Amino acid sequence: MQPPTETILAEIPAVARIVATACAIETERHGIPMNPHDTAVQARAADMILNGAGELMRQRTERTFSARE
Image (cartoon, rainbow, N blue to C red; front, side, top):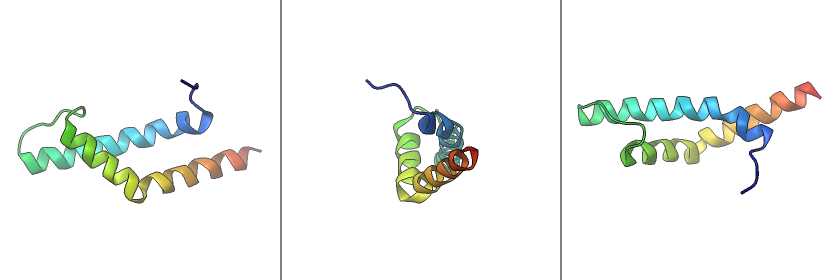
């Protein structure tokens, strides 16, 4: 497995926020506290990332790196 790139490491906090949001949505939907490792939470987070949040996150991170150079 390849080591994580600087871009991926920089995206970890944003992914953590997306997972927390997905967890809150699923907790509200099910009416019970949901674990971030639950498949429903993971599926919701994946959908959020694949439906546009991931691209925006990548663009922001790349702009940050470009500004440093």
